[in-house]
Amino acid sequence: MQNIQNYINGKLQPPLSGEWIDNYDPSCGEVYGKIPNSSEEDVEEAVQAAVKAFPGWSTTTVEERSSILLKIADLIEEKLQFLAEAESKDNGKPISLALAVDIPRASSNFLFFGNAITQFASEAHESVGHYAINFTLRKPLGIVGCISPWNLPLYLFTWKIAPALAAGNCVVAKPSEVTPMTAYLLSEICIEAGLPEGVLNIVHGLGNTTGQAIVKHPKIKAISFTGGTTTGEHIARTAAPMFKKLSLELGGKNPNIIFTDCDYEKMLNTTVRSSFANQGQICLCGSRIFVEESLYEKFKTDFVARVKAIKVGHPSQNDSNLGALVSKEHLEKVYSYIEDAPNQNATILCGGKKVTVEGYENGYYLEPTVIEVKTNQCKLNQEEIFGPVVTIMPFKTDEEALSFANEVRYGLSATLWTNNLNRTMHFSNELQVGVVWVNTWLMRDLRTPFGGMKDSGVGREGGQEALRFFTEPKNVCIQYS
Ligand code: NAD
Image (cartoon, rainbow, N blue to C red; front, side, top):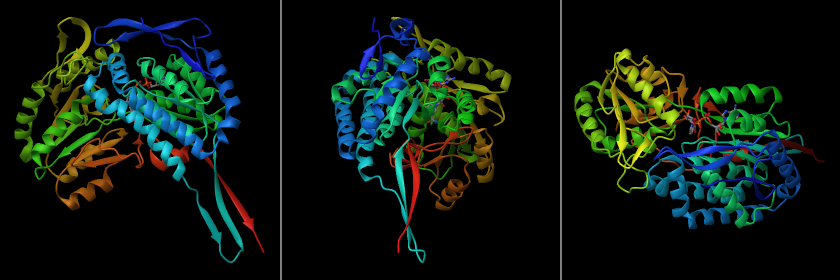
């Protein structure tokens, strides 16, 4: 059994209530550890520790803060193999993905914001003719809350924590109760890196208790949340009357628009990845594929052949392209959309069945599934499934593709495959999304703003946007004679 603990005031400790939650290994469906079922009292302790630490942390020099963050980045990198194995076991993702993406990115998050804070500048405005100069002070907010989901556990947890700490805030953070392991291992790393006690506190537990206690705590000034749209609505309802600053990164139902004039092989390879990477459990996966009519039949044949060749297997095996879905509950949710496909007048072209992996018969495995739909209005195209399920559908004109892409409540990202510059610019201007990838997918530069429109969220993370979110701008106007 691998039991994990809360990290409060620089120490690892059990929940005050003595209550624990089971932690499952999705690859075999067995409990392999316990996590704290933290209550309001644990959150209160974490907030008190953060309040105590804030005067010291917020006045450390930028160089000191930066060097601790860079040390954390180095330690994550040193422990790459160990952390990747832990992430893969906790989440069900292939070890190859955790090694190549999740853990390196967690290290990069600390490296990036550890460096970015040394370059962070604020504005000055000279009021010519008034003999006055305005400048902006950017002060840390105080205590901030960071809440993250299970799909990219350490990657997204550190994406919030690193800029919050870099900007001089103290943090109370909660990872998903479904994948808490690497957040716990991060607390050990923070101790090793010499992060002063109370600066970061990690409290484990359920969303509607531990998470809710963080969101409603009056001393927590801002909430940075990544997760589902329904949870985001709930958080907004709680936090808005308290006038907390909110950054909400929510669900997606992203279009992948393919034109005949694309680089076909590159598009096909990338589309397999953008459909099914991490078992399709990435908010940026292109889950609605729209293909220009003249290319549709060829694409359909080639894509289905490629998808049939994907190997679903135990996450620890290097040749597994897809691992297990994160939980039994999530597997059943995703599967229910597949079962419902015939009622949506849709056709399953490949996949659609649960997979039994020898030796791990109770694991949560599902075949990558391609479904041909007749209309963009069907449930399969309108609701976030968040699993290895994509739909395909032809379009006739640019305007039709654009309207399909935008006819959805979400607006996180879109992918466009074309070599036509005018079309690229037209779509980039008109797509109602926060991120547009053209002839690529999930190519991230951490300096760029990241976030969604419509029901995919409020606010932007990344680069200067994150540092701005985690600071309070204060205008100072000095008149001189
Ligand atoms: P979720 O909303 O169920 O949970 C996310 C986190 O919020 C967890 O830590 C959970 O414990 C906590 N939580 C739940 N209820 C809460 C409450 N009432 N108050 C405070 N915290 C609460 O989401 P999930 O199932 O873990 O993750 C999947 C979702 O996340 C998908 O919808 C996906 O699109 C979205 N997501 C979005 C992005 C993005 O950048 N936009 C990135 C990754 C995942």
